[in-house]
Length: 167
Ligand SMILES: CC(C)(COP(=O)(O)OP(=O)(O)OC[C@H]1O[C@@H](n2cnc3c(N)ncnc32)[C@H](O)[C@@H]1OP(=O)(O)O)[C@@H](O)C(=O)NCCC(=O)NCCS
Image 1 (cartoon, protein in one colour):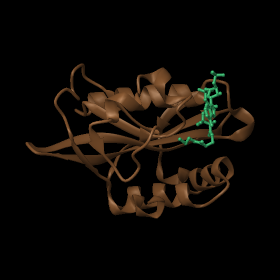
Image 2 (cartoon, rainbow, N blue to C red):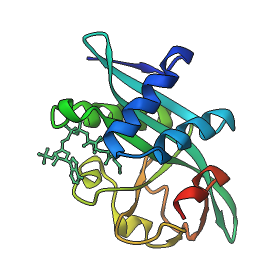
Image 3 (spheres, rainbow, N blue to C red):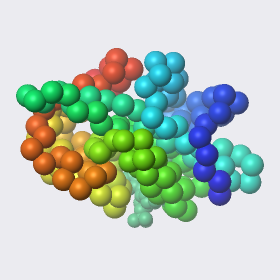
Image 4 (cartoon, helix red, strand yellow):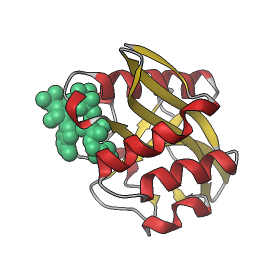
C-alpha cells in the first residue's frame, strides 16, 4: 500500500469512493467544498494495486476561547473501499494524517465518528467535553497532538460553512 497526497487526477475517484463507503453524496461534496475553499491541511489517498483504496481529509477549524482563537485539525471525512475494510488501511491513513497535522504545527485534532474506532488513535470524548460544537455528543472526540495542548482550553469549535450540510 502506498499513501500519498491526493493529486488533481484523484478527484472523481475520491467522490466515488465516498459514495460507495457512505452510501450517499454528502461526504464527497464536503471534500470538494473544503478543497475549493482552501481549508484542507492534508488529503491523503491510499493506493493498493494501482487503485484508490482509501481516503482521509483533515481541514482547519478554529476553537474560539475566552483568551483568543486556537487552530485545530478536523478529521473528516474518511473512507475505505468496502471490500478492503478491516485490513489496516484506515488506521494507516489516520496515523499518517495525524503526523502531517503535527508537523504542520497543529497541536489539537478533533473528529466526529465511531466511538469504537477513533479512541485507538488517542481520540477521546472526555478531552472534547470542554469544547462546544454543533456536533457535540459521545461521537465528538479530541486528541492532543502535543502533550497538554488541550489543558485549560474551553470554547466553541467553529466549523467552516462546508460542514453546515451535516448540522
Ligand atoms: C471506518 C473505516 C474508514 C475504517 O477503515 P478500515 O480500513 O476498515 O479500518 P482498519 O482496518 O484500520 O480498522 C478496522 C477496525 O475498524 C473498526 N470499524 C470499522 N467500522 C466501524 C464502525 N462503524 N464502528 C466502529 N468500528 C468500526 C472495525 O471494527 C475494526 O476494528 P478491530 O480492529 O477492533 O477489528 C471504514 O470502515 C469505512 O470506510 N467505513 C464507512 C465510512 C465511515 O464510516 N467512515 C468514517 C466516518 S466517522
